[in-house]
Length: 308
Image (cartoon, rainbow, N blue to C red; front, top):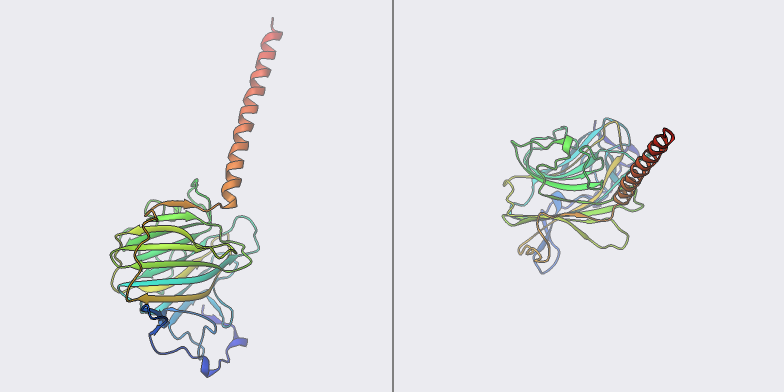
């Protein structure tokens, strides 16, 4: 299903995206990559100039790209028509995940830099056997992990090793962090930076103070030469809507070196309220068990004394 909101289809010709692939942003050699960037209006002449979309994706031309609606059993995608720059790139994107449920919902969405595209599959709406990079914004804890959810993780796929939904990809992840990005009154931002042969660095901005937080870094990473940029989402019995609000992709003549203060491949937690609630719940269960055991012991002793 391909859908564009009909009432928003009349677009001024002056807003047609530039045909130039690179536009220099500064004297430092940083370039915007237009075929991998998205901002309103998202369509031109009833089509997206640089991206394909499908599944249940719906485009609100002047607002957002909705990968899935807040309904069960939906899948949606957008994929670039051109491959990303080979040596380095940084993709910064705004997104919003929300729905009618204020508590448990799912399943999440994914960022991709992979060789195959436009295929619907079981991993956040895409293939479980992929070749390239996947960064997963997972909103449901399938594996019963101690980490708080929502959880952001990354995996380098080789086309032979699958992402396992049952354990949320924890056995194959290159790093991850707990990050509560749901039900925000403002779009959350994420940044994925890749420097060939050196690192992948994922950062999240999920607070109103505009402070970026490191999620994870993986080193010695080399992706295939021809990877496409994609975003996909999936809902099951639990559901949310998953919106992409904007995408800005850049490349550089002088890519940044990795900050020595950042610890590669570390798991980080960023104070999700679910983590606090989980701790309190476990503590209350432990106290309840202790109290029950004590009461049982007292009752047993009382019966024993009455026999004599």
